[in-house]
Length: 68
Image (cartoon, rainbow, N blue to C red; front, side, top):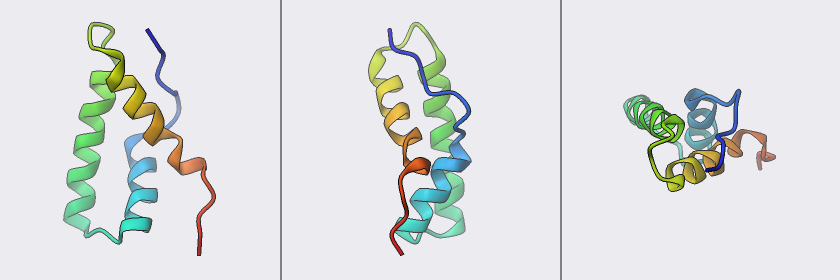
């Protein structure tokens, strides 16, 4: 079983996604809710690794350079 990346929170991921996708406030709220659900699923050892893989992939986004 893989581990999830620590110290990256859904709101960090939302800030990057909303910057690139130009999402609305409501879309950002819904995305953040979905990411908290995904993070909880990824932290549950009984769930499959694909939850951890997806969360870990998204958790890397805040560390990628932004294009202006």
